[in-house]
Amino acid sequence: MKRGKDNINFDSERQEMVETQIVQKGINEKNVIEVMLKVPRHLFVPEKFLSEAYNDYPLPTGEGQTISQPYMVALMTELLQLTIKDRTLEIGTGSGYQTAILSELSGEVYTIERNKNLSEKAEKLLSSLGYKNIKYKIGDGTTGWKEFGPYSRILITAGSNEVPKPLLDQLSNLGKMVIPIGNRLNQILTVIEKINDNLTKREICGCMFVPLIGEYGWKT
Image 1: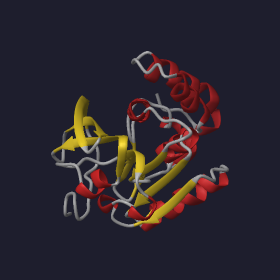
Image 2: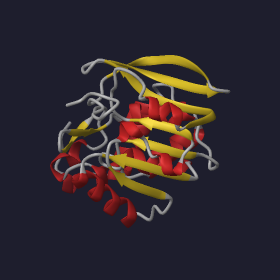
Image 3: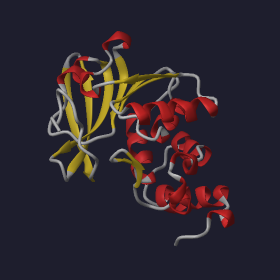
């Protein structure tokens, strides 16, 4: 239900989001639940969507991108099984909301966004919120960020028809990657684990993300 932003209790909305969209749907990792309660999602959505900030669906953020459904953010985060020891690579900074979640649970976060405006806007917001363990890059996320690799965790927040090889190469031994794999309209959220250069894949659920654009993704 849409309501005027002046009448919204964002803390209450966030509490309800976690209870009804996340916990009741099976997310049970304590750290993930706590961080979803903490991070103010409404700060990452355009002002005209403030009344919908905690609703159970993605929202446009401009530049053809979206902020993911809260449940999907929580699910991808839980699948990564993050600890403070992890060096996490995020492909697709977008609004910065998922970046904030990763920052809360990882030791270091390296996030890449191909859209300069989105990257700069997210960096400004995240810096204002006090996040200091994040490095930002504007460029082609499908090629990764070799300079700071390898990464124990990699999250791709856009859909690809296959796993970009540079990202597999930059995933450390015993590392985990979460990526939507499929066509432009529908994908399967997939967990990839690397053990002694052997890869295992586990399909989780259907999903729909914007396409992963780049040298090792969709071309346009």
